[in-house]
Amino acid sequence: MGNREILLEALPGWREIAVFDELRPNDFIIKTLEYCEPFIERAKMLSELNPGEDFRHVAVIPQSVLDRSHREGWFNDREKWSEWANDSANSKLRTWPGRI
Image (cartoon, rainbow, N blue to C red; front, side, top):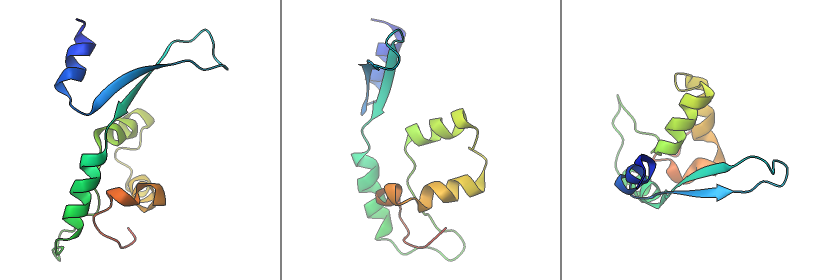
């Protein structure tokens, strides 16, 4: 068993698949998928709590999104995080309904 297989076994909810792209037939592409249902359930639970006045939790962020923010260079960009949080595609991960 390779190191990558051991790592994926240690991270429940993750799996890898091989992707064959007709536009790139000579490339071998591995796609890592993350099961996000637990994040959605956690966000729903947190959305039912009363937010504090000084600190307001606004979203649950899956590891795959954090990884992408590092890869694409916007981890420290507040505007990009606001854009991500306000995107309707991520609404199920929001814990607060207001605009950020």
